[in-house]
Image (cartoon, rainbow, N blue to C red):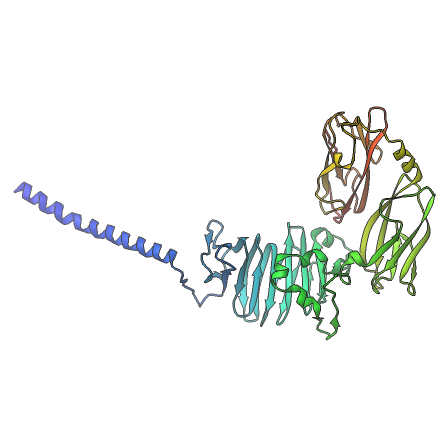
Length: 464
């Protein structure tokens, strides 16, 4: 009896557990089936945008919270709801749309759908680049340093670059820009670049940050993908004025082509104490030109400007030219270098190393930063070179001898910074001389840093 009772009780108590396991198995099957299904359930009662990868190989994620990150598979699209953390595109492109706006999202971009009201959508561009076409209502896009209002019919491109610059490109109609210092209407065909340091300037006029759409952005894959050049062929502002655009050369809109040098050429060597400076003017917008903040003479008839006897008081002369329009807005600034007679004489007697390893420019290579001139907003920067082993005895930067450079070593560093006055706002010119063991100049190199920030605190100089 005892055995029969025990067996009977064991048999009946095992049945609920069996059903529980079967239920869990069914839930798991449903979960995995929905995970791999190409159809996506959309809660139409919640404001959302449909996110669609551009191709099946695009790597696109929707993060609903800080800890969740789900990849969008296929090209059918999945919803990004207000309240979700963000969409991030790691490779390829993606599109976000909801019937009122279409947003093309570049790779390495992070975008948040912040809010939806009866009048439109609010988004936040955390990093990189998007292309926006507003079909109805309006969108408001928050960036680090500004807010953009995009109205029906507008086409713009936005770029948030490394948390420093917030850039807006107006491509069709005008765009309203709101910052902590005021509101600005950006005309079609122009771009504005705003940094936090710009906004810290109490005398800032937003118009001074506006420029033409530069040549580099025309080569952006996102710009090309959306036929940006065709838009620039016939830009119409909301005033109804049609602006012309030369797609073949981009010369009208490129600030680099505002003026063309005639003489002296970059890197010229002269034996006189002065040199005539002559340039041709390529744009009617150019109304004023300065050379090292000295006024040049503008000739509207001949479309040239001249400075008859520009003084050359040094071995290496850096001529900083600035170009302005009628409103006083700076259109262009850059640097050309002219070598004086003393430098030319020194060059003729320059001592080289043994014939087996002669010194040339390739033996003195800038490792970082990547460009010369270099534009930055940081308060300090480390400039790094490489030199030929056992060639250099010591190094002079603007006649200051680096104290930590080890004679004969192959690398060296120089810290330019605000607090030690080796870096200032604007254009910074550096003359680097590499000296031999007999105090002879082995090689001279120029480096330019254009600093656009107003605030800095770091300091120091280091080399090895």
